Image (cartoon, rainbow, N blue to C red; front, side, top):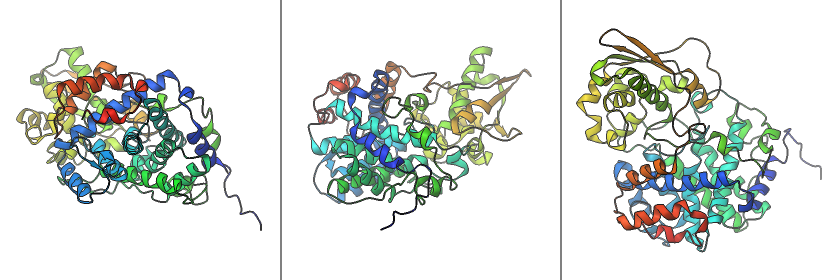
Amino acid sequence: MNKPADFTAGAGLTARLATHAATLRYDDLPPALVDRLKQCVMDTLGVATGASSLAPEAAILKDYVLDFSGRPEATLLGFGGKAPAAWAAFLNGSLGHMLDYDDIGESGHPAIVTIPVALAVAEKIGGVSGRELITAVAAGTDLMTRISRAIDVPDWTMTEGWFATQLLGYIAGAATAGRLLGLNPEQMENAIGIGFNQMSGSRQMAVGAATHMRAMQAGFSGQGSVLAAQLAQRGIIGAKDVIEGRYGFFKTYIRGREPDSDGIVAGLGRDFPLMERHGFKVWPACAYTRTTNVSILALYEQHRLTPADIDSITIVGGTGGTQLLCEPIEKKRRPKVSIDGKYSIPFTTAIMAAKGNVTLRDFTPEGLNDPAVLAMADRVSYRPAGGPITGKGGSADVARTSVEIVTRDGRRLEHRATSVPGDPGNPVSWNRLEAKFRECMSFAVKPVADANLDQLARRLRALEAEQDVAGLLRLL
């Protein structure tokens, strides 16, 4: 029989990535990466738990999952109780994105498509050490980051209409679950192929409804990832060459382009590009809102401004994503539900200008109707900048978005942020991350005792010493 035609320059790329994910060892991981992934676990547990009471869709999804009954394999974060691992990954992954407070990478949110999966599978099989959990998450996030960095379409996730977190989540999550289940390289490629065949993730989402489904996209990939790994473990054969193939990821989703296979596998097993591209949010809103927050804080500090000094605020430039979060301006100034406020640069800018910070409470019904914030929002406008947009996603946004403030005494002040807190060049400290974690945990439907919370925070900082990570979840 003749060998099928090789339609790509990167033949064997998926197999190499699968082998990498299946054979990665804890000892291969740089200490800085281990520390970052421990932070990711703390951060994801916090934001998912907090969503249980703050997001109106959370209870709907929890009730839906519990209606299935099934084996009590994995904990439902924030609510307590257990469900089959795949369904726990669905709920917990969805919770992790509901507050828009989760971590951020260059093309997506790697922690929420790997850590809920890892925790659910680890709890199901039992006896998974902290080191094993960290290694599995490292495998999944490394595949996601390597694939995303090879995408060279400017502002891809906005201009092309794909939701990278969900798309790449099926691959990252399958690798994470497969590593915990001990899949060999062939089984791992099958798991990635099964994940790919479930792949979806469009930005054509429901908007302006209290039961917003956007966050569920991380849940869909989490559930599908557990399914993919479990089926591969049982012997189901998945599609091959799903990254580089004729109908694979790049040909289907990236304008028919060939993947840069050399770039994707460069330093495989030695270098971990997540460290160059990953950050944490210090404000609970879309990443595109962060640069204006930085500029407002900088201008207030430099010029000793108070809210009473502000005559007008103008957001200038940015990527296509920035414009989407600024227009139509009247609607963006008056969001009706939490998720719309988090996706509004005028509104988040107004919060920062009126209060000096942006917190979870600012997106509750009371926060959305705060008279001081709404009065400030009426002073916020947007003006596009001329010239073509270059670069990808957040990097272009940081480089081009600026804020202009006109004061009541006639001064015209301008600031352009070059970095934001939580980005690789401006990292978040453990203490600041733990403060965020505790804030989020305070909103759990099932309250966590102070002693348990203290113990949990301490043990998460030393996650590599855990003999069975299921013990951490028993503290919730």
